[in-house]
Amino acid sequence: MRILLLTHAFNSLTQRLWADLVTAGHEVSIEFDIADSVATEAVALFQPELIVAPYLRRAIPESIWSRHVCLIVHPGPPGDRGPSALDWAIHNGATEWGVTVLQAEAEMDAGPVWASVMFPLRRAKKASLYRNEVTEAAAQALMQAVARVQSGYVPQRPEHGQWQPLMTQAARRIDWQGDATATVLAKINAGDGFPGVADTLCGEPCHLFDAWPESTLRGTPGEIIAQRETALLRATIDGAVWIGHVKRQGAIKLPATLAFPECAVPAAGHFIPSSPTFDWWKLTTATWQDIAYEEADSVGFLHFEFYNGAMSTAQCERLRAALAWAKQRPVRVLVLMGGEDFWSNGIHLNVIEAASLGDGSPADESWRNINAMNDLTLELIKTPNQITVAAIGGNAGAGGCFLARAADQVWVRAGALMNPHYKNMGNLYGSEYWTYLLPKRVGEEGAQRIMRDRLPLSAQRAVAIGFADAVLASERPAFRIDVARRAGEIAAANDFAAQLEAKRATRDRDEAIKPLAAYRDEELAQMRRNFYGFDPSYHVARFHFVNKSPLSWTPRHLARHRELGWMPNNNSGSRP
Image (cartoon, rainbow, N blue to C red; front, side, top):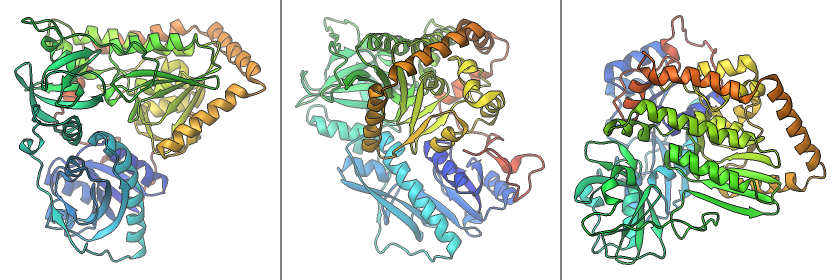
């Protein structure tokens, strides 16, 4: 079918549905929902047989849904209605939830149901649930709905429905003198990603995000009692919660200690002690830690849980130190696990943007950050005594993809997406040794195509073109089991010594042909132009990205119907 995706943005859910639809052989184009006139024009140009809305912040105009079948992907079970469906489910402690694909009508979320998929609702952040369970259920439900549209299926209206109003900040408000830790976590989790929970820190209004429980430290409810790396610890009536990210009024979302430096330093007789994780290599759920390590059967597993996959200069430096430490362990295989939701998305654009708020320079911080990413990538490339694996369980983008490709093996969870390109960020050239790592896997032409097309790679497509080495189970517990089993098999292989020797010989041969330092110098020469040159495109794009500026047009590589010479049934284009 010819399917138009009408969406507020090309977010993770939209990317996944786009990839699945194209893989299934459908002809797909994308239009950002900017205005009724723009959407109407897109429909006229593309002449879709079906319109799918994976992520909207306003209703589809009647002029479109009254003339075309429009499927809405709603993050709630059949009958559930309203803009804060998932927020209320988390807030109220629901144990089961779902995704419904329904037809757009005049009444919001009340149309006939084409498909639905249910799933257990784990206790987690809204953004994490959205990227994982909601996305998986949406992909299943949409493919079922599309098949039903093609078969002539007659959709049914749900027998009952319940309208859930927009969750206001009054409903999200934390009572630090009365709410238990579990309640505080549920409230912050229900607003994680967007809109956060309105609160105050150090007497200043802000919104809270990214909360984690603390099992041992205690203090006066509401008080900040400790700090660790980028997070602040705030006491509750029965424990404490780590606040990882904060958005001050009128500012951008930042790591808590960067957003509120006055809360993290001695002031007015109130000292905020540092609480480092001395045994950082011990993976635990009893506290918050962004880097952890575990070991079993000659395999080391290095975890790094960085919010939204963004890696600041300091985080890159700490992860590099952790990797260097792990390389000295008596293991044969090192697996870089990344985080639950993201493996890595490269440099930290919000922290870079924050440099402009003080006496710093975003260009200088960009330069420091990209060099720290390069140092980390080099540390991984130069691992002569272990076989290294990047186990990509969550999405990866930009420099994070090439950090992963610096490993000997890249294993991707089915359902995870990779965006191994940079140009969407103001024509950024990119570094992380991609000019060495990418062509050797996909060829020069393939590398140029990936950078030019700027489209997501599904796990299956990444393996098909040679960027990744294996697709593993989509369910996360099964994925982790697969990773451990496969890594253990490599460590126990009879030819392990021969594999290691072949790896060293290849690296020596590549270095003799062209040193890694030369690739880095060439890439950084281009990046210096991006950061310090006369063209401000990177800085403009970064500003709009971190400030969530309203989109004003759909990029042409997504809106195929706006390409010159495009005609319906023209099946040319890139595969996911």
